[in-house]
Image 1 (cartoon, helix red, strand yellow):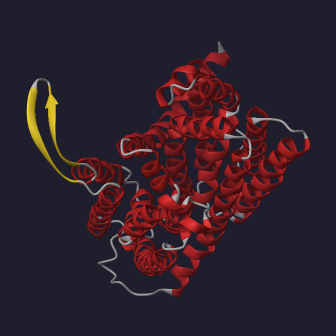
Image 2 (tube, rainbow, N blue to C red):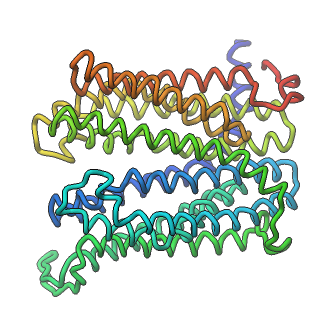
Length: 471
């Protein structure tokens, strides 16, 4: 009976914090889910134009991910500093840091716009694209990179709002972006045509711009997102820089960059690793490459929930550090790990059970489905430990601890996944399943190392390590 009473008391103690974690997390979950859904719709709409159009649009995806990663890194730097300042009720520092994020977004946006437009004519050739898709690929990449400042604002200022506990506004802005993207795709990609819906025949106007139309739709959605998020940040009482004015502050800028630079480097090394990983898989043949690509896309939907937990954990960790509340910090960590394990165990079980159904959504090819089902069931087993890596990473980022995570991410990507893949393909002459075992091994090792980093507590300030309780 005593054990039952103690358990009930513990649940009552954790209930408010768990509620806060989930309240912050669910809008991010929905935002990511909508992004994934629109990605699927985008792929299908462009795919209707043929394989060359799909290839032209998909070719530069890894480069786009890399560019976005730089903005996400800057956002994480701002989030860590602002959430800690708000936890300490230091609104002045929060506003000064938000002001620095404006300068970072402007400089990074202009610089990345210039760089991407400069390389867009030669990028398809660098990526070994076939000659017939290079013109479309160049046009697509150049168009989506033109509104780079708006893209930077959307990502960086979204992190500023999350640091202030507002995860709902970035979600709503993202929904508006996605809706505009789909509508403009429909109007710009296809030519004017006759449609018949539920027996109603009508003429649907269209620009017939093909791949360029898809690019314009994406670019317009970036503009909308940037405007909406900038307006929301400017109006947010906790972080709006308008009260203190837009002024450079060397100390606040340094605090942001100290956290952001290792995250950007981690994104860079991880992105490079994914490019190499895909190139290695391509040597296994068309069927294996198709199964690999589709399985990666399919798996993405099953770890959406944990990215919501990642964002919420980062904010609450920063708040607890600002409040200098060691007990709350420990409770955030325990809640994050338990919720992550439960969520990812559930989604992993779903992925394992419904792997055949999921693969058939994307391809009718029985050989591709068979290989895809095998690798999806392999990775499903590692979803809980992979979830811990993402959840703990959020806590460490909220604490501003990014150097050691950068080392862990880089080492596991290159020493476990890439080196292991080279060994199984060229040394052991094995196929796609063995390659995904290497990926599962990397997820497992990374999750274990992140958990080790968290449990050691070296990421906490010294005074909070001493105050940590064992309850």
